[in-house]
Length: 257
Ligand code: PGA
Image 1 (cartoon, rainbow, N blue to C red):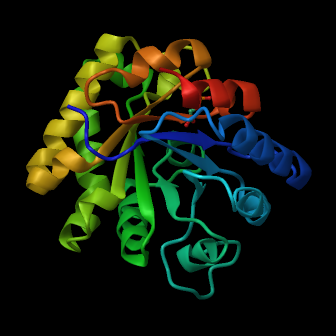
Image 2 (image 1 turned 135 degrees about the vertical axis):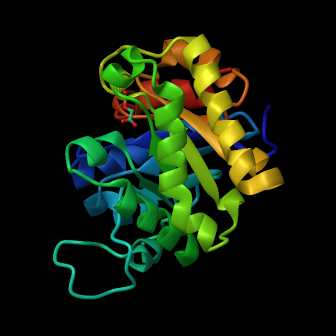
């Protein structure tokens, strides 16, 4: 199934890029993709917090480029040292944000409970939320892929579902942990079966609206595998890490057909 929303090509810059490097990358991407982005696509850049303002400025005249944050704290404001609130990100031009990325789950110790609060709070604040889910290699070897994906979806979306927020402002990114930053991309059959489980679960949770939620694939997406991944059933975009840090590779992925 292909949703009727635009395919999303998202670049997660993680903890990379100085201000000058971020500006240069955003400028080059806007330039390279000005007349090469297929009509049904949008590009989302997720720079580090420190570069959001500069990238917003670089993208101000770029069509179909969106700006997002890699993280935030789910509160309006308050005594949360070191944290950043959704409205501060929106102030800088962010319309999207990630939650549940495997590095935040496994390196920073984020729980499904916190991730669920972030998804619900972000949606209520007016951000388009991208909930990342995915199994570890051990879980895959133990045949637990479906169980893990369903569990992370149900737990990650509990509060959003209770708050009855608009599901079309939500995307899910399937990112098998073993494929992130490893050069090991999931096989088309693995992507197809994982995305089918996710679609079915979304339809059970959100009925018809579950069919409109974008499902992105992430994990070692590169220019030479992007087209084959993007044409798979229930793949509505990609979330790119390493290959989003260079303008030539990310532009090639965004334009891949
Ligand atoms: P990768 O990262 O493309 O470098 O595997 C993907 C991600 O972390 O979102």
